[in-house]
Length: 89
Image 1: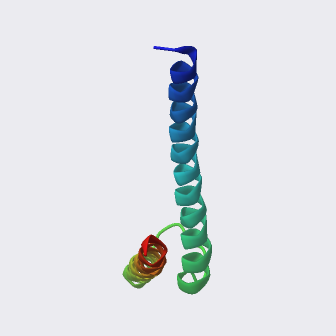
Image 2 (image 1 turned 30 degrees about the vertical axis):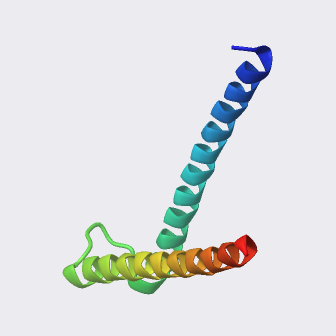
């Protein structure tokens, strides 16, 4: 393996590591957003225990947030794929 190939492999490994770290940061940012939005929506007053209605509200809030995020991500992917298809012509 030449020095160039070795550097290229290291660069790819570094890029893969950075991509993974970026994905972790995005997940953490989304979790923070879940907490903020759903806390404001569902928690009336802090107590030592969550009642059933609050648990259901939190669960539904996070589920809807995830559904919306997935829908938006899919839509952007479709748009990018269409644009990529146009560039191939």
